[in-house]
Every structure is written in C-alpha cells, then in structure tokens.
Image (tube, rainbow, N blue to C red; front, side, top):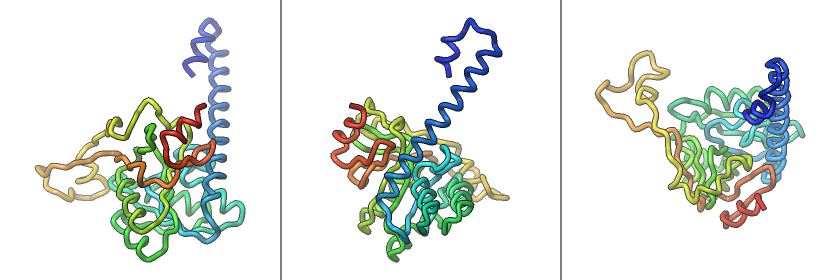
Length: 245
C-alpha cells in the first residue's frame, strides 16, 4: 500500500484512493488463493470422520475465506467430509471460545468447546487423530510461535502419538530468524487473567501474573508445516529454505 502511494504521489487524491482500493482487493484475492491452497494441502492429511484438536483462532475471521488451520476442515465440509473438532477455549482471551467455535459451528462442522486443560483427556480417550494450529512466525529451523498454550498441546500430542501440524502462509516464515529463541514474546496486562470476563476480580489485586501472549513450539514436536506451496517436513532448515528457491 505504501508502494502504491509513493509511486503515485503526484496524482490527485481521488485517483490515489482508487488505486489503493484496487491494491486492497488484489491483496484480498491473493490471501483467498493462499488460504485455499493451504486448505487443500492440509485436507490431504485427513480422512473422513477424523477428530481434530485446534488451539486459538486461525479461521476466516483471522485471514480470508477459509483460514489456515481451520481451512482444511471448512473445505472438507464443502466437499462432503465430516470431522469432529475439539476447540480449546484458549485462555486468557478466549479466542477459541469466542471465534473458533463460532466459525466452525457456522460452517456446520461438529465442534466441541473444551477448556485448555482438557486437551490431554480427549487425546487419551482416542478422540483426536490430528492437531491443526496456525502460526504467527516460523523460524528457519521450524520452531513456531503461536498463541500461548500451543507448545503444551504439541507436547501432549507427541506423548499420545498424534501428529501435530502447523498451517500458515510462506509470509509467516522468517528465514532471518534462526530459531524460536530469537522470537521476542509479548507480555500482556495481568488484568486479562485476573479481571477480564469476570464480574469480580478472580485474584487479589497484589498478586503478580505472568501473561505471555505466545509461546514457541519446538520443531521436533511438529509433524509438518503446511503452506500454500506444499507441506514441509523435517529437516526444516532444508524444506523451508527450498520454498523460497
């Protein structure tokens, strides 16, 4: 958008706005195409009737048309496939409860909302055949930053022998970031834990809180990283770099 503005700085404002509008629509169409490609590749990892666990929100509200982690499920539903999805509530901002469960329900997909600390039980019960999550950044070695709690889901999945997949566009991959240790994690207000969504505070005012917005999932826990250009497998240093050659 800045490039369009800079290249047309001498034009009347009305013309610049029209050009920006065209660029907006082009970006949107590109995002739809990326999400649809990610959805197709992700769907190849599933079979009809599978149970899938997801964490946080990576659906149409976060991206375009299909979303990333939810894309294969929504596309599969359009093609007549059926899945049962377990959606973590995703404390403390509850994106899974407020957004993901809404999107899946609206798409006609069988969804069950669970508290974050219930993930191990549904995995142990054999109800989950795969975990699909989105990503905020992917390091060159495959370490992945995503909503806080994602790393714990990956560890549980590894223990129970459930494949854990990360889905996102290649724009999320940062080859200049060597490992997840190089990703700075945002820490947010303690009030999100103690006060938000409650009529009364749930902890004394003087109690300290640790409220990181994201965590980093180690690449050794990830079965595959699904992009619009294909599915990357370990060793990720090689497969991720190959996407940009």
